[in-house]
Length: 314
Image 1 (cartoon, rainbow, N blue to C red):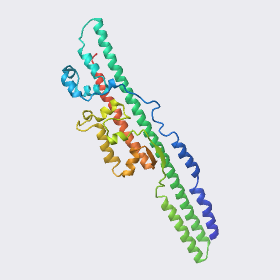
Image 2 (image 1 turned 180 degrees about the vertical axis):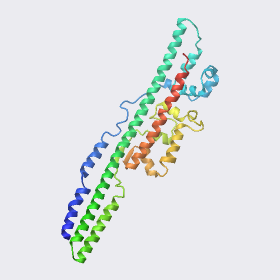
Image 3 (image 1 turned 90 degrees about the vertical axis):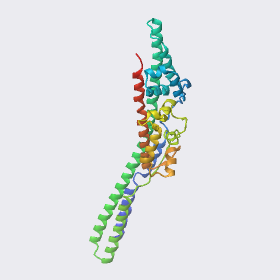
């Protein structure tokens, strides 16, 4: 009976524990093919004429015609989108009734609206890239989670089967010593496999993000090589945050530190904000979480953009 029990174990174990191992490796390799596919195909160049001006306060102090018609918040958004000079030109136009004067005002408003529409497109495009990166991380994290779930299921089934086989074997064997040996051996195997099911498999996957959308928010440089100048200005101008004391970008970083990366090691931080590496499922979930927070903040800029568009004269 003992050789029979051993043969049963050797038959069941490979089936339950090694099923689709090679298939899983192929899936992981396929999942990492075409990494960084969220990166824009074209590299965008931004017109320096629309770059935000650093001396906005000096401009507003010297030109009071703007502050009479627009709030400071709207003027900061105008500076962010690059339409502040156009607003200055529009404010200097007299409200004449001649066709030429009307045409000049209409032309100027159209120029402003076109630039604001382009800014809206920049927002949507960048938010879409962030969303894509978040989905890419979440997709692989879900795959690793499901793989670990299948592993736990197989270990649990294996533990139950071994327990059942041990019970049957000990019931059929009359001799005392073989009975005890089989019972103890089966119990140890069952307990071991059941214990393994309680632990994560620590399966990792190679995940690349050379164009790391999180890095600049974390490192807080003065200029960003990834973010459009318009978006980077809004994220780093304190007046756009609810408190006005710290910038939106700084607040995002603080939330990451306090809620997401509170227990993250230096190695994990280098992983999240570097060019990539081997990610566990939990690491991928954390990265997706940070990207989702960033995307929400970027999309919320549309509220400020809409406020500026509504404040434009008819």
